[in-house]
Structures are given as structure tokens and as C-alpha cells.
Length: 201
Image 1 (cartoon, rainbow, N blue to C red):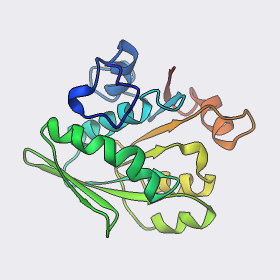
Image 2: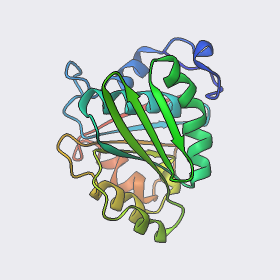
Image 3: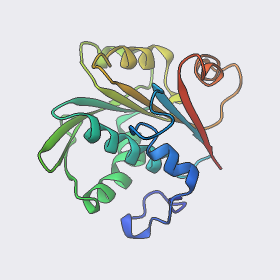
Image 4: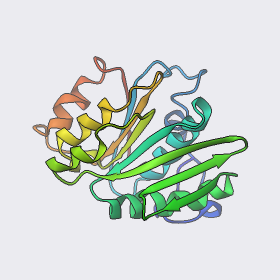
């Protein structure tokens, strides 16, 4: 189902997803060969559709596996989370039958579908001090938008908060230099860390 290049287009303008993207959208499903993976990494250029694809996958998984649970959506800043994730994804979710309530004063997104309701906290991880923002939470999963722009301490703190059984992680990023900490510790360790990695051109 490859989305249109402009991720901010609404649901009616989203094109078909490709076979590869469908795998990424459903990697967590019980019938997927990747269901035992703990995380997914989507690597690709800007406007390759990775943010929209990951967003749909993340929200769908949250409602497939959980009810009344807490999750985190992280970007370099709250503004970038809203621009890259919230703005293009909420209209699409509405067309898919989800009810979304964005509370910017609290940096939360409450989503409900049928009898289920989950809360998604929005975080900006711009520097080392950002790790303190997420301490003490109990999360069921986390999505990192442009993870290579965030400090290692923030990412590790967010991952440590995912203490619920069946927690999973979503990472998307643009290609980074080989010495980058995320490249070294995640992309190069994908088999050891039980990751499913795919690339959008």
C-alpha cells in the first residue's frame, strides 16, 4: 500500500501499499513470520512514506494487543512529532473508524475504537536532559520518529519504560553514518536484538 509522497495528504489520497509495506504494517500480527521480533526499523529517505506506514502499524498493533494501556510517540521535539506524525495520521485514523482526542496542553493523544481506549504520550528527545521527562512511566510500546536525531540516553530511558508483557518498539530514521550509536547498536545488531528491518526508497 505505498502512500503518496506527501504524507500529509488525507486518507482518500493514499495510494496502494506495496507488498513490502504490507509486511511492515502487519509484522506484529499472529500470522506474520516476523511476529517474534521485538522491534521494527524502517530506514528510508525523507518523504518515502515511512512515517505514515509506521504510524498505522503502531496504532493498529496497540489496539490489537491492548486496552486501557499507555504508549509513547517520540520525536526530536513535540513540534516535530505533531508535524511528522500527528497531523498526517489523525485524519487517516478518523477515516478508519478511530476516535482521536489530541490534548496539546498535556501532550497526549487519546484514541478509542469500539470498546477499546488507549493513551499515547508525546515526547521530544532533543538532548540528554530529555530522558528525565519519561522516567517513572509504564509503557506498552514506543514509536521513535527520526530516532537518529535523539540522544542515546533518551531512547534507552524510553525503552526501559516498556515493562508490559508483549511490548514492542518502532524506529524510523534516515540513513546515518556508520559511526552513529543507533547504527552501531541497533541496525548492525538486528539479528541479536530480534529486529525486523526494512528500507523504503
